[in-house]
Image (tube, rainbow, N blue to C red):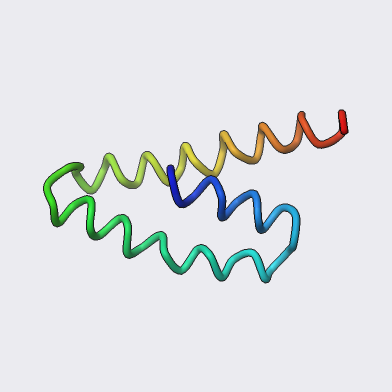
Length: 65
């Protein structure tokens, strides 16, 4: 979630160019599994949670600004 959240926020704010930060996501996922800190299903759940939760937060917070 640590890389996915900022990627979603940058993409939400800057469009397609924000997706460049997303190139780090597979690297972080691989390193977490390789270091045996998480399982594959845990990193996939983190990615999904990061996308959904960040988007929902931006959706509700930005109209208030």
